[in-house]
Length: 186
Image (cartoon, rainbow, N blue to C red; front, top):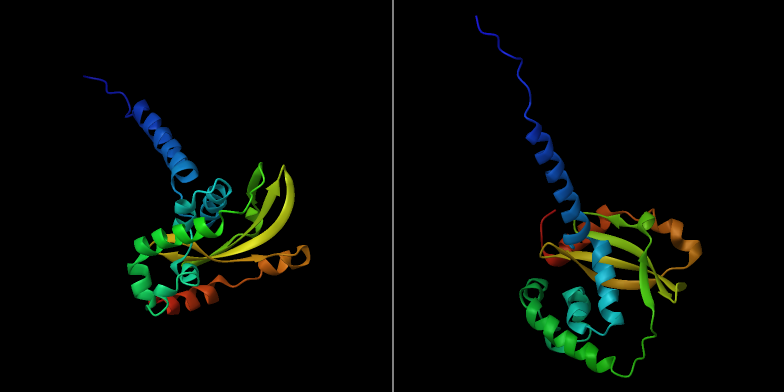
């Protein structure tokens, strides 16, 4: 009579599971840059080094159209369709407009994650702009999802007494308004 040992899970399966979990964490933390906090961070990092191509890639076409009158009569769908041309033109306008602006060295941006509010098509991100480690401004960015990527629609100053109000923002209402703007169904 042969004895059979009880069935065991192969040890290599545990190694594969750990490798998959580590890979998913790495992707989410270092590669996936579609989130609103990453958009704000990339925008400011690019701005501080005067990389206006990257700056324009992180701005909404609806923000850009304010500085590009040639696109003013387009519908939201047409603006989204023409994103590449708008980015190129916006990059040129920003470079020209900022050519005399002196950006101090050691500028950084620090996202205040506890205030981030994210919906399906919108987000609000609070961040501090720092010079040599000292906060110079606190701002909030309102972002809209365009073609599956968060883009900055508006940036406004935030005062310390209004920080708690940001936690009360209803992203469902923002999502509904943005869905109407870009013509998608909610």
